[in-house]
Image 1: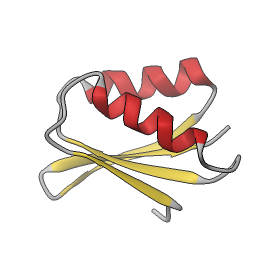
Image 2: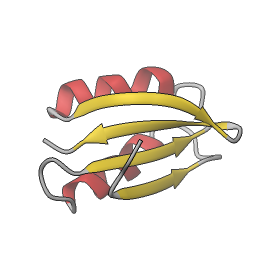
Image 3: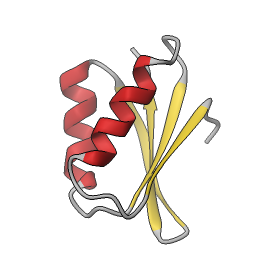
Image 4: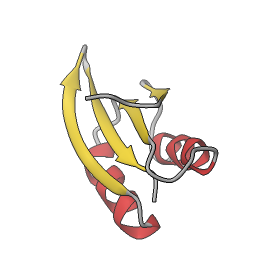
Length: 75
């Protein structure tokens, strides 16, 4: 999936992947897509919850080289 920016949050534990995603999304224009790479098992719950609560859209998630890539569209 195409994305405009990427945050590498591999090897970071909750809540750091979400906090890094939040910071990156605030610096992006509405409609742009952020890819977050995370290895934290809690991210599978945290990323959808963060997107829902903040108004952003979780477009997809997929396994990528030992991590999971989460694609978030900026609201």
